[in-house]
Length: 151
Image (cartoon, rainbow, N blue to C red; front, top):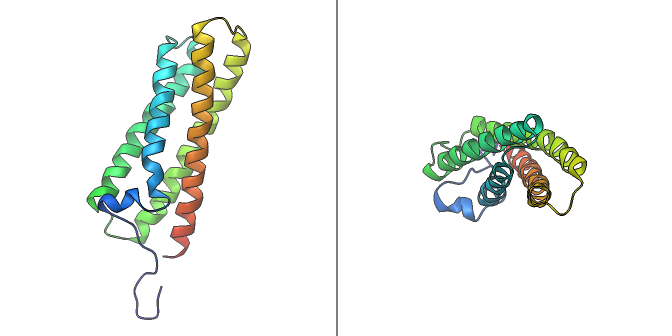
């Protein structure tokens, strides 16, 4: 906190989320997360157990990230420290969830081990986008934590 009582940190609102780090990562998180969702759905969710979990994680994170982005765009956070803390917590949770979904998805894809099938190729694409989405959420978490420290 500054000596005059103001916060040094600032949470963006409106279209400034497209120009500020880490908030500019909202759109790539949505695009890559949506691709994971679509690619896994195109495999008819076979095998069921790990891919159903991947679907649940990708849909949950897609919806929550979209809602979180809308909160920031509307300025509902009112530049409060609690929202900066919640931002770090949510993106850390999303990072852990995506990582916990990416590993079994990669294992199932390796078990398929048939490069001639369309389902295998879709699974490979889903694994790549799943790890990229995980990386985006980790980067968002790190920069959100740095911003949180300035509050």
